[in-house]
Image (cartoon, rainbow, N blue to C red):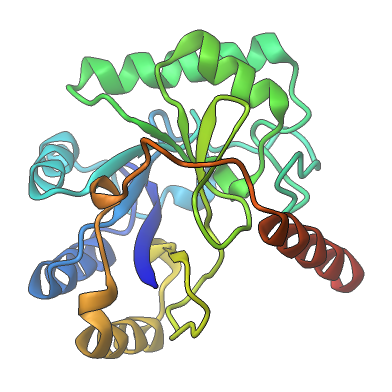
Length: 241
């Protein structure tokens, strides 16, 4: 098995002490994550520190290290209580939103990142929620054809997109073969979270790869096992939600 790490909610007003701490940690273990960038943050929950005037320079610095830049919606403001085709939560910036509105969001997000020198290849939906209109908007307004999300053991291709599953929150050793993405939100990480993450990396760093090391050219459609896994997972979540 191989492990990936995704870090959500990158923006000018993120909690800089925590992000710089995780950057130092990752550098020491050679970890190169996918970072989900909010192009135009309007979410009060992500306004932790004052806007950092060196934000875009920092973002370019970590990209040059091999960190993957992902498009994390547009403004990170939830507009519906829908879960779409990946119902991890009942809230969304995209799921249930009209196609033309979604197109405008994607267009604005891409334009903003392009203007600052970034060309994201991966889409990361806030709260993991999106729908088929989101895929249509991405096709229409961007060149992005990779999604970080959904439940499966390995990447798969569907609707002209490659999906890199995001299955787990905090790091843990997984005995079943596959490619697993751990998802962290550094802005809300506790001291225990940092200590547990570093302990795991010190013991398992050789299992981690960068997103650009994934071989995605010949990805196949979703397997029956992955379909059953996703069905079981979301039924379980629905029962205990």
